[in-house]
Amino acid sequence: MGPVSIALAALCAGLAGIAVRIVILRHQVPLNSDESLAGLMARDLSHGHVQAFLWGQPYGGTLEVFPVAVMIAIFGSNLVGLRVTTLLLSAAAAWLAWRVAIRLTGRRSSIVAPAVLWLWPLYFVAWSSQEFLYYVPVVVLGLAIFLLSLQIRDDPNPW
Image 1 (cartoon, one colour):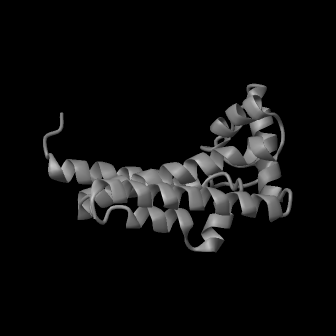
Image 2: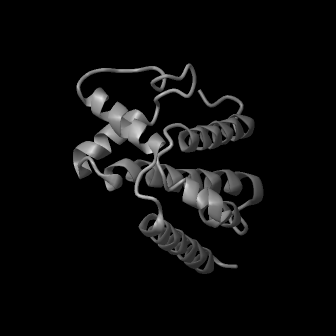
């Protein structure tokens, strides 16, 4: 498998993931309570009220509220403004999975991990197409920490 076929496979997987997400977003329930909470907390943040935790919960954190507030400012207070952050974070998770796979398996088979994360299972794809505030950022942060730990392993004196 040469570099061109790897790039073609990555392009096909990426486009398939985008197509699946478009179909899912067109046929999902318009809004759920978690997404409403995200939108309300993002609106509250735009008025200068910073919260450490989700309203009414002593856990969870509001890490994703900040980019949601930016996206709502750009796209408006609608479903696109709410869900585009999660879609971008899902793409970042697939990219980080690719970077981890390159370090662990080499370039030839590195396309498998991000393709699986981006396309399967369908439940996760549907779930990661909605705004649930902290689940997808946790996946992104976990992959970033894993990638950094591989960097430390490969270069024990990076500083």
